[in-house]
Image (cartoon, rainbow, N blue to C red; front, side, top):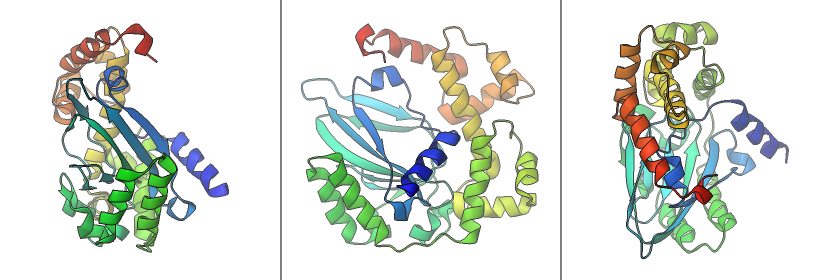
Amino acid sequence: MKERDSYRERVGEHRIPRGIVAEATARTMFTLTRHPPAPELAEFVDYHWVLRWDLRGRPAHEQRVLPNLAVHVTFFPGASGVYGPARDVFSHRLEGRVQGLGVRFRPGCFRAFLGAPVSDIAGRAVPLTAVFGPAATAAAESVRTAAVDAQMVGAIDNLLIAKQAELTPAARQAAEAVESIARDPGITRVAQLCADTGLTTRSVQRLFAEHVGCPPKWAIRIYRLNDAAQRIAAEADPDYAGLAVRLGYSDQSHFIRDFRAVTGQSPAEYARSARAHTERVPDNDRT
């Protein structure tokens, strides 16, 4: 129980970019439930996420998710794999009736499972069996046929535990560096992260390439711009100049360039898209 409490405290104390685009519409298309991992995996895994949708007799839905730093291991028909830290907006077509599970690993904590620098899989996916062997096929089938969430979570916990991964001191250092960014929105420069961690710029860069899978500058940008996207989607009349200042940008044009690089849209385009989706959702579905 202590380990589960630790999980809740850790997940609750810092920002975790989730980046579901047009959340109001998304809530009418699928259900998403998050579950803590087994105690043996608490150092490695932020949470399991279980997704279900039933769009039989309805149009297919294209769901977009903003990039984040986590490695996700997914078990879905047609979309199973080990997905490295994303560099672009991820889009997936939802149709028919499907259930599946994904594992969100703590940034910095997947190298022990991969056996190689996480930068090797950045921006791409590799087959489950390439990392977890033939047992991954049976685990995916268990997820597909599970009657309840606990059966899915148990099957995947067992698959991960069987790897007997160990978190190295360097991996812990990488995870702590990312959590420094997550805890403190005031970290907007790599130099500030170096001061917080006590590491040189070159050491931080090597650590992130090996264990996180992206440069530290990109990691900081992901957190800042996920924050921006949430605020833009939630506000009726976003103040882009004020938002740029709050996020530590020296000028609005720099903020707009970075926002477009992460989301594929300008802040104004993103706001219009979010409003358009919200206006199409019935009032009783807005929760």
